[in-house]
Every structure is written in structure tokens, then in C-alpha cells.
Image (tube, rainbow, N blue to C red; front, side, top):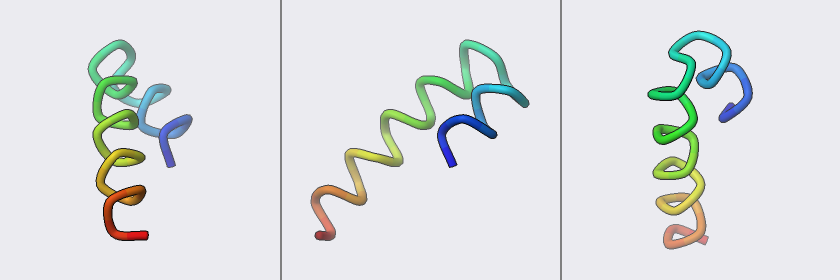
Length: 28
């Protein structure tokens, strides 16, 4: 979950959430 990652890593978590959403979009 991007929100959970952002909360745990702060700014870094936000970047991770974007990459995760991108990978999921490609998989879909």
C-alpha cells in the first residue's frame, strides 16, 4: 500500500508507492 509505505518511510515511501503502482499497472 502506497499510503502505508509513505507513513513508514516518509518521502522515500512515497517514491516507492509510485514505483509499486507503476509495476502493478504494467502487470495489469
